[in-house]
Structure formats: C-alpha cells, structure tokens
Image (cartoon, rainbow, N blue to C red; front, side, top):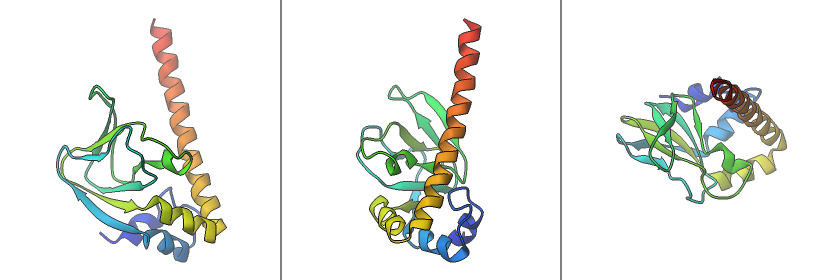
Length: 147
C-alpha cells in the first residue's frame, strides 16, 4: 500500500498540501503486528502515534474487555500529542495488521519547524477527539436513562 495515497485523504492530514502530507508520511515506518499482539499498552509512556492501514485492532480495558473496534484509518495514541504521560488504554491487533508508526518526537519537531502542519494536525485531532466525546456523552445519556 502506498502510504501517501493512504494519507492524502485521511482526517489527520485533511487540509494539508501534497508536499505537507509527504513530510508527515516521511517520518513514518510501516510496522506489522500478528494476531492478538499489543500495539500499545496501558500505562506505557510514549508520544508515538500509529495509524492503522490494514487489518483491525481492539481497544481494551485493564480487565481485557473490548471497548472499541478499530478499522483502517484509525489513529492510535493521539492523546500523546496533547499530553505527555502514560497510555490510557491497551490496543491489541485483531488478526494480522499493518500500521504506520510515527515517532512522536520527530512529529513534534516537524510541527514546530512547519507551524502550519502543526496547526492543521492539531485541529484535525481536536475535531476527532470532540466527535468521540460527543459520542461518549450520547452513550452515557442512554445508560443513565435506562436506569
């Protein structure tokens, strides 16, 4: 799979020029995970970001319960770009999967050197997190109403 093509229309890079997308993709490397292999582990410290390009993955609680299923295009670890600290969940491959691994430190440097890329990437991640929060609020409201 050509990574540029995968990211040209990805929500992470929406609004970037082709050259800017190439700059982001150039930071990455393709990594593969076998079935049921941890991509990130809860409590690990890392600022790295992953984008699922092939296969699927599951977000799990500490008890091992699945709380989300991820498809190609999903970003894993985006909170690390906003807050340095420990991972908030474990994400495990669900079958063989390929991901683009973006070194968090290299991405930070690129966003500082090219502030427009930084602004666009942060805006896009912010939109994504807002959408997830809205969805979580609806789910919580449904649960509370059912009590």
